[in-house]
Image (cartoon, rainbow, N blue to C red; front, side):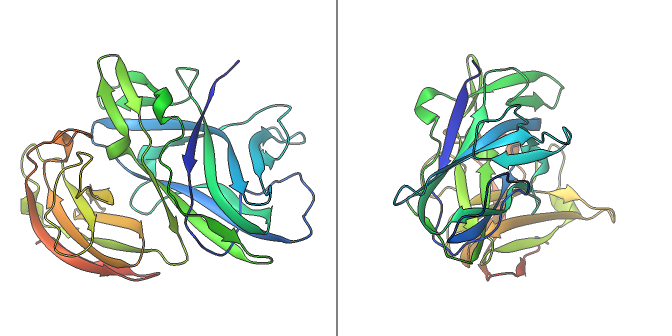
Length: 309
Protein backbone atom coordinates (compact mmCIF):
# COMPACT_ATOMS: atom_id res chain seq x y z
CA UNK A 1 0.00 0.00 0.00
CA UNK A 2 1.37 3.40 -0.92
CA UNK A 3 2.56 5.38 2.06
CA UNK A 4 1.24 8.92 2.51
CA UNK A 5 3.40 11.36 4.43
CA UNK A 6 1.35 14.14 6.00
CA UNK A 7 2.92 17.58 6.05
CA UNK A 8 1.09 19.79 8.54
CA UNK A 9 0.78 23.54 8.51
CA UNK A 10 -1.24 25.30 11.20
CA UNK A 11 -2.65 28.28 9.37
CA UNK A 12 -2.86 31.94 10.42
CA UNK A 13 -5.99 33.82 11.55
CA UNK A 14 -8.25 35.29 8.87
CA UNK A 15 -11.73 35.32 7.29
CA UNK A 16 -12.63 32.74 4.56
CA UNK A 17 -12.18 32.11 0.90
CA UNK A 18 -12.17 29.65 -2.01
CA UNK A 19 -10.67 25.90 -3.18
CA UNK A 20 -9.99 23.76 -6.26
CA UNK A 21 -13.24 23.46 -8.20
CA UNK A 22 -14.95 20.17 -8.85
CA UNK A 23 -16.12 19.26 -5.33
CA UNK A 24 -18.66 16.47 -5.55
CA UNK A 25 -20.20 17.16 -2.13
CA UNK A 26 -23.45 18.98 -1.31
CA UNK A 27 -23.26 22.53 0.03
CA UNK A 28 -23.35 22.84 3.84
CA UNK A 29 -25.98 24.94 5.62
CA UNK A 30 -23.56 27.48 7.14
CA UNK A 31 -20.47 27.75 5.01
CA UNK A 32 -17.65 29.91 3.75
CA UNK A 33 -15.01 29.39 1.09
CA UNK A 34 -11.31 28.64 1.20
CA UNK A 35 -8.68 29.14 -1.49
CA UNK A 36 -5.23 27.73 -0.98
CA UNK A 37 -2.14 27.77 -3.18
CA UNK A 38 1.49 26.79 -2.83
CA UNK A 39 4.64 28.69 -3.74
CA UNK A 40 8.36 28.15 -3.17
CA UNK A 41 11.53 29.77 -1.94
CA UNK A 42 13.92 27.88 -4.27
CA UNK A 43 17.19 26.02 -3.77
CA UNK A 44 20.30 26.42 -5.94
CA UNK A 45 21.50 22.82 -6.21
CA UNK A 46 18.49 21.51 -8.17
CA UNK A 47 16.85 21.94 -11.55
CA UNK A 48 13.52 20.46 -10.43
CA UNK A 49 11.96 19.48 -7.10
CA UNK A 50 8.75 17.48 -7.54
CA UNK A 51 6.28 17.05 -4.68
CA UNK A 52 3.19 14.89 -5.21
CA UNK A 53 0.11 15.73 -3.14
CA UNK A 54 -2.84 13.32 -2.99
CA UNK A 55 -5.07 15.43 -0.76
CA UNK A 56 -5.47 17.63 2.31
CA UNK A 57 -6.73 17.34 5.84
CA UNK A 58 -8.35 20.35 7.48
CA UNK A 59 -8.93 20.21 11.25
CA UNK A 60 -11.33 22.50 13.07
CA UNK A 61 -13.05 22.92 16.41
CA UNK A 62 -16.39 21.23 17.19
CA UNK A 63 -15.50 18.34 14.85
CA UNK A 64 -15.37 20.64 11.82
CA UNK A 65 -12.90 18.29 10.13
CA UNK A 66 -12.53 17.55 6.44
CA UNK A 67 -10.31 15.10 4.60
CA UNK A 68 -10.13 16.03 0.92
CA UNK A 69 -8.83 13.79 -1.86
CA UNK A 70 -7.66 14.63 -5.37
CA UNK A 71 -9.63 12.26 -7.61
CA UNK A 72 -10.06 11.55 -11.29
CA UNK A 73 -13.35 12.91 -12.59
CA UNK A 74 -15.65 9.97 -13.36
CA UNK A 75 -17.00 11.76 -16.45
CA UNK A 76 -13.77 13.30 -17.79
CA UNK A 77 -10.60 11.38 -16.75
CA UNK A 78 -8.45 14.37 -17.76
CA UNK A 79 -9.99 16.48 -14.98
CA UNK A 80 -9.17 16.48 -11.28
CA UNK A 81 -11.90 16.92 -8.66
CA UNK A 82 -11.79 17.37 -4.90
CA UNK A 83 -13.80 14.83 -2.93
CA UNK A 84 -14.53 14.18 0.74
CA UNK A 85 -14.72 10.44 0.03
CA UNK A 86 -11.87 8.12 -0.92
CA UNK A 87 -11.32 8.16 -4.68
CA UNK A 88 -12.43 5.42 -7.01
CA UNK A 89 -9.31 6.48 -8.90
CA UNK A 90 -6.81 8.90 -7.44
CA UNK A 91 -5.35 11.74 -9.51
CA UNK A 92 -2.63 13.30 -7.32
CA UNK A 93 -1.32 16.78 -7.98
CA UNK A 94 2.42 16.72 -8.76
CA UNK A 95 4.08 20.14 -8.52
CA UNK A 96 7.56 21.22 -9.59
CA UNK A 97 8.29 23.61 -6.74
CA UNK A 98 11.24 25.09 -8.64
CA UNK A 99 8.70 26.66 -11.01
CA UNK A 100 6.77 28.22 -8.14
CA UNK A 101 8.86 31.31 -7.36
CA UNK A 102 8.98 35.06 -8.01
CA UNK A 103 5.29 35.35 -7.15
CA UNK A 104 4.08 32.26 -9.02
CA UNK A 105 1.92 29.69 -7.22
CA UNK A 106 -0.03 26.48 -7.84
CA UNK A 107 -3.66 26.23 -6.79
CA UNK A 108 -4.47 23.57 -4.17
CA UNK A 109 -8.06 24.63 -3.50
CA UNK A 110 -10.16 27.19 -5.36
CA UNK A 111 -13.23 28.46 -3.57
CA UNK A 112 -13.81 25.19 -1.73
CA UNK A 113 -16.92 25.28 0.45
CA UNK A 114 -16.32 24.46 4.12
CA UNK A 115 -18.45 24.56 7.22
CA UNK A 116 -17.99 27.93 8.91
CA UNK A 117 -16.07 28.14 12.18
CA UNK A 118 -12.56 28.02 13.57
CA UNK A 119 -9.85 25.77 12.13
CA UNK A 120 -6.49 24.88 13.68
CA UNK A 121 -4.41 23.27 10.95
CA UNK A 122 -4.11 21.97 7.41
CA UNK A 123 -2.13 18.90 6.33
CA UNK A 124 -0.78 18.22 2.87
CA UNK A 125 -0.86 14.48 2.17
CA UNK A 126 2.38 13.92 0.26
CA UNK A 127 3.19 10.69 -1.59
CA UNK A 128 6.71 9.37 -0.94
CA UNK A 129 6.52 5.64 -1.66
CA UNK A 130 7.66 5.68 -5.30
CA UNK A 131 10.76 7.05 -6.97
CA UNK A 132 8.76 9.26 -9.36
CA UNK A 133 6.32 10.93 -6.97
CA UNK A 134 8.39 13.19 -4.67
CA UNK A 135 11.94 13.55 -5.98
CA UNK A 136 14.72 15.96 -6.92
CA UNK A 137 16.46 16.46 -10.28
CA UNK A 138 19.96 17.89 -10.01
CA UNK A 139 21.49 20.36 -12.47
CA UNK A 140 23.48 17.54 -14.07
CA UNK A 141 20.25 15.60 -14.77
CA UNK A 142 20.66 12.99 -12.03
CA UNK A 143 17.53 12.13 -10.04
CA UNK A 144 17.13 11.20 -6.37
CA UNK A 145 14.10 10.23 -4.34
CA UNK A 146 13.24 12.73 -1.62
CA UNK A 147 12.54 10.98 1.65
CA UNK A 148 10.90 12.54 4.68
CA UNK A 149 12.27 11.29 8.03
CA UNK A 150 9.58 9.98 10.36
CA UNK A 151 10.30 12.74 12.88
CA UNK A 152 9.50 15.37 10.21
CA UNK A 153 6.36 13.80 8.75
CA UNK A 154 4.08 16.42 10.32
CA UNK A 155 6.23 19.20 8.90
CA UNK A 156 6.37 22.63 10.44
CA UNK A 157 3.45 23.47 12.72
CA UNK A 158 2.51 27.14 12.96
CA UNK A 159 0.61 27.77 16.17
CA UNK A 160 -2.07 29.96 14.64
CA UNK A 161 -5.48 29.01 13.33
CA UNK A 162 -7.90 30.53 10.84
CA UNK A 163 -11.62 31.24 10.77
CA UNK A 164 -14.09 30.39 8.03
CA UNK A 165 -16.79 33.04 8.38
CA UNK A 166 -20.30 32.20 7.28
CA UNK A 167 -20.68 33.52 3.74
CA UNK A 168 -17.11 34.85 3.80
CA UNK A 169 -13.96 34.12 1.84
CA UNK A 170 -10.27 33.54 2.68
CA UNK A 171 -7.25 33.09 0.46
CA UNK A 172 -3.91 31.72 1.70
CA UNK A 173 -0.56 30.80 0.19
CA UNK A 174 1.77 28.14 1.61
CA UNK A 175 5.43 29.00 1.04
CA UNK A 176 7.44 25.77 0.80
CA UNK A 177 10.99 26.97 1.52
CA UNK A 178 13.24 24.53 -0.35
CA UNK A 179 16.43 26.34 0.68
CA UNK A 180 15.64 25.33 4.27
CA UNK A 181 13.91 22.02 3.48
CA UNK A 182 16.27 20.02 1.21
CA UNK A 183 19.12 18.34 3.10
CA UNK A 184 21.85 16.14 1.66
CA UNK A 185 22.71 13.02 3.66
CA UNK A 186 24.97 10.01 3.29
CA UNK A 187 21.98 8.06 1.93
CA UNK A 188 20.63 10.66 -0.51
CA UNK A 189 18.41 13.68 -0.06
CA UNK A 190 15.99 14.41 2.76
CA UNK A 191 12.96 16.68 2.73
CA UNK A 192 12.43 18.34 6.11
CA UNK A 193 9.52 20.62 5.27
CA UNK A 194 9.77 24.27 6.26
CA UNK A 195 6.46 25.98 5.54
CA UNK A 196 4.90 29.33 6.26
CA UNK A 197 1.36 30.42 5.46
CA UNK A 198 0.38 33.92 4.37
CA UNK A 199 -3.02 35.59 4.08
CA UNK A 200 -3.13 36.80 0.48
CA UNK A 201 -5.55 39.61 1.37
CA UNK A 202 -2.79 41.36 3.32
CA UNK A 203 0.35 40.14 1.57
CA UNK A 204 2.82 42.36 -0.27
CA UNK A 205 6.13 41.85 -2.06
CA UNK A 206 9.62 43.26 -2.59
CA UNK A 207 11.17 43.40 -6.07
CA UNK A 208 13.94 45.13 -7.96
CA UNK A 209 16.97 44.96 -10.22
CA UNK A 210 20.50 43.71 -9.58
CA UNK A 211 23.33 45.64 -11.25
CA UNK A 212 25.06 43.55 -13.91
CA UNK A 213 28.51 44.14 -12.45
CA UNK A 214 27.40 42.45 -9.19
CA UNK A 215 26.88 39.15 -11.03
CA UNK A 216 30.53 38.10 -11.09
CA UNK A 217 32.11 34.84 -12.27
CA UNK A 218 30.82 31.77 -10.38
CA UNK A 219 28.09 33.88 -8.77
CA UNK A 220 24.91 32.11 -7.61
CA UNK A 221 22.82 35.22 -6.91
CA UNK A 222 19.96 35.48 -4.46
CA UNK A 223 18.25 38.07 -2.30
CA UNK A 224 17.67 37.15 1.34
CA UNK A 225 14.70 38.67 3.20
CA UNK A 226 14.77 38.92 7.00
CA UNK A 227 11.93 39.95 9.30
CA UNK A 228 12.49 43.31 11.00
CA UNK A 229 14.67 46.35 10.44
CA UNK A 230 18.43 46.52 10.96
CA UNK A 231 19.03 42.76 10.85
CA UNK A 232 22.59 41.62 10.22
CA UNK A 233 22.19 39.10 7.35
CA UNK A 234 23.20 35.50 8.02
CA UNK A 235 23.07 32.13 6.27
CA UNK A 236 20.36 29.49 6.67
CA UNK A 237 21.67 27.62 9.70
CA UNK A 238 18.61 27.07 11.89
CA UNK A 239 19.45 29.88 14.31
CA UNK A 240 18.29 33.49 14.34
CA UNK A 241 18.37 35.40 12.14
CA UNK A 242 17.22 32.96 9.46
CA UNK A 243 15.60 34.58 6.43
CA UNK A 244 11.82 34.60 6.14
CA UNK A 245 12.31 33.76 2.48
CA UNK A 246 14.86 34.04 -0.32
CA UNK A 247 14.41 35.12 -3.93
CA UNK A 248 16.33 33.88 -6.94
CA UNK A 249 17.78 36.35 -9.43
CA UNK A 250 16.76 35.92 -13.08
CA UNK A 251 17.68 37.63 -16.34
CA UNK A 252 14.61 39.11 -18.01
CA UNK A 253 13.93 39.59 -21.73
CA UNK A 254 15.73 42.96 -21.65
CA UNK A 255 18.91 41.44 -20.24
CA UNK A 256 18.34 42.88 -16.77
CA UNK A 257 18.82 40.85 -13.60
CA UNK A 258 15.68 40.98 -11.47
CA UNK A 259 14.21 39.36 -8.36
CA UNK A 260 10.87 39.24 -6.55
CA UNK A 261 10.20 38.11 -2.99
CA UNK A 262 6.42 37.66 -2.79
CA UNK A 263 3.76 36.68 -0.24
CA UNK A 264 5.18 38.78 2.61
CA UNK A 265 3.10 39.90 5.56
CA UNK A 266 2.98 43.68 6.15
CA UNK A 267 5.95 45.01 8.12
CA UNK A 268 9.54 46.07 7.72
CA UNK A 269 12.12 43.66 6.30
CA UNK A 270 15.89 43.65 5.92
CA UNK A 271 16.94 42.61 2.43
CA UNK A 272 20.45 41.75 1.27
CA UNK A 273 22.11 40.45 -1.89
CA UNK A 274 24.61 37.58 -2.08
CA UNK A 275 26.54 35.73 -4.78
CA UNK A 276 27.12 32.80 -2.41
CA UNK A 277 23.66 31.24 -2.36
CA UNK A 278 24.87 27.84 -3.60
CA UNK A 279 27.25 27.60 -0.64
CA UNK A 280 24.40 27.99 1.84
CA UNK A 281 23.48 24.53 3.15
CA UNK A 282 20.57 24.29 5.63
CA UNK A 283 21.41 23.47 9.22
CA UNK A 284 25.11 24.31 8.89
CA UNK A 285 26.99 27.59 9.21
CA UNK A 286 28.81 29.00 6.17
CA UNK A 287 30.64 32.28 5.59
CA UNK A 288 28.21 33.94 3.19
CA UNK A 289 29.11 37.40 1.91
CA UNK A 290 26.19 39.88 1.70
CA UNK A 291 26.03 43.35 0.16
CA UNK A 292 23.59 46.20 -0.36
CA UNK A 293 21.72 45.52 2.88
CA UNK A 294 18.70 47.80 3.38
CA UNK A 295 15.41 48.10 5.28
CA UNK A 296 12.28 47.86 3.14
CA UNK A 297 8.68 48.44 4.33
CA UNK A 298 5.96 46.16 2.95
CA UNK A 299 2.27 46.97 2.84
CA UNK A 300 -0.72 44.94 1.69
CA UNK A 301 -1.28 44.49 -2.04
CA UNK A 302 1.81 46.50 -3.00
CA UNK A 303 5.25 45.71 -4.43
CA UNK A 304 8.00 47.62 -2.64
CA UNK A 305 11.01 48.56 -4.80
CA UNK A 306 14.58 47.78 -3.79
CA UNK A 307 17.36 47.80 -6.41
CA UNK A 308 20.93 46.68 -5.79
CA UNK A 309 23.06 49.15 -7.82
